[in-house]
Length: 481
Image 1: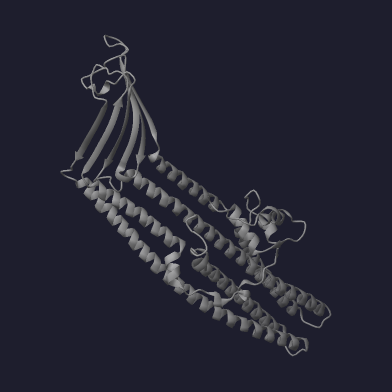
Image 2 (image 1 turned 180 degrees about the horizontal axis):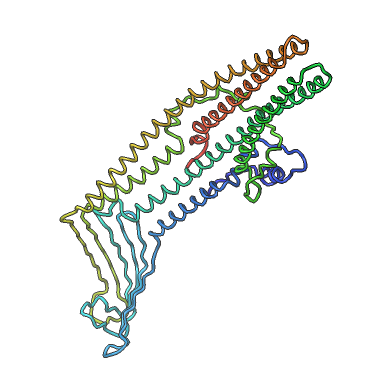
């Protein structure tokens, strides 16, 4: 049984529909709502769950190779001297994986007298014959055969599908979180540009009044209005970028029918989360790269694929061996005999097939063996790549953290300089050009600081995905279920 992906049904059934359908008043939005929506309705997860069902169906199909079978055979003459003479045979056969064996029991009956064939085996007592037998292999097919291999491969495939589903869920969650926080920080940048445009507009109104009163030359108003136009253009660029992030977020923020959210509504939602970077505990970064390289879901998947390859190698290697099959059967006739015979018949047989030239199987064995070696080399490279990527991410986090701290200090200094310039401007010791330069500097420093924060948030989320969300916590659960 697949575990439920979404545990908080109240959130997805009641809160989320309200978020996506109500535009008459302000609606709160946070990371939890986005993540739950994506895990509940994202198409990739639907497909991943269907692949689990396909794998389980294939496993059931493979197990069907060991289903009991009832075989019935009837021979009868329809004309001539032996008209209505015939032979009926019914067998219940149970395949067994070990020894490539089949157990069977059955009942046979020759009808209306002696069956007209040289082999008297087809002639039974008047009440028929009960029989029991088994057949097995001692070389080819002894420890592994097509039926056993198909079951092992299907069982591994079932576990693989569950690992793949967990990886898809973790990836969707990771992408949803990054999409949400990009939207979150672009909202802050948008607010910044709106505030600066509002300041420029109010100043322009004040200068226009001063020009009208004759206190300033007309060129001052033109320069002031140029600043307004420039900030309006900058704001439009940010609006486009912000709306684009809302479109991306809508892929994860879906309604109860699985349809994407409306970006026009999403852009007006209230964001209630605390700042991700400001509240992040950098001491929680896990340094255990070896554990991650051994237990990440993609690594476990690669290991399972290698196990499938090992099964195929053993099967092809086994096919090189000679075929030696034994058969034993015992039977008892009941009633009067059509022909004189003993009460019990015991039979034993052996079939031997020894390949003289076995180029086909030897070539196939060499091929699958080399293919499996490639898989093992790929696994080693994957684990090395994971460690390398973690090192790069940690270096990136360290770099962005330092830049974030530095730009944060720049923001404080830029704000202090701007406040001082405003004070000088109000006292008549500065001019509009210097004030505008300070405001532009404050705007761009804040913009850069927030974009560094966004980049840091994205790499932190990616790091958490690489070291936690996509890693099998074997102590907590079985990752193959």
